[in-house]
Image 1 (cartoon, helix red, strand yellow):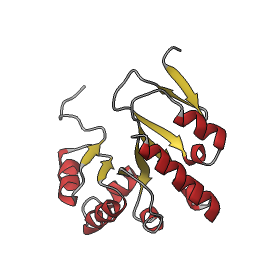
Image 2 (cartoon, rainbow, N blue to C red; image 1 turned 45 degrees about the horizontal axis):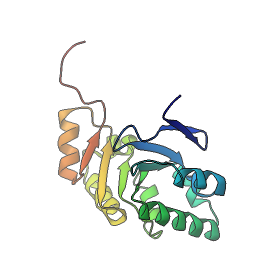
Image 3 (cartoon, rainbow, N blue to C red; image 1 turned 45 degrees about the vertical axis):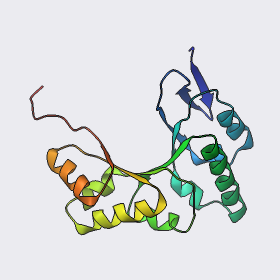
Image 4 (cartoon, rainbow, N blue to C red; image 1 turned 60 degrees about the vertical axis):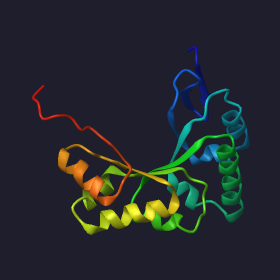
Length: 166
């Protein structure tokens, strides 16, 4: 398909859409061939969301250092780096990693579990220690939107629709 490239089994639209978000596994940063394909994409800066974060935590110290170097290179190229599906347990593991991150996406299940508790604000605060932007997934009602705003999140994402019957 014209305009599409494959990076580590993931297809992405290149150079046609501005402000594109793509989800990639952390292994793109550990496999040299995959990383080289990523950095050679001829496109405007991307918003790269890394998924399968537990895989990062299982890496050796040397592998983690390589991932950080690769993230720094992506950042220097102007790409925004996001961690996807962070929750109140996973966030603790990343506080000491010092990754060059642009944003954090809080997992919808974590939001739904914490939304009417002070722990949501604490999670958002911890996420701001990792990155300058925080997005909460799972916003489906006006009340969810209010909880996310009160917790201090910058952005919300979800199936939030006006109350109409389809």
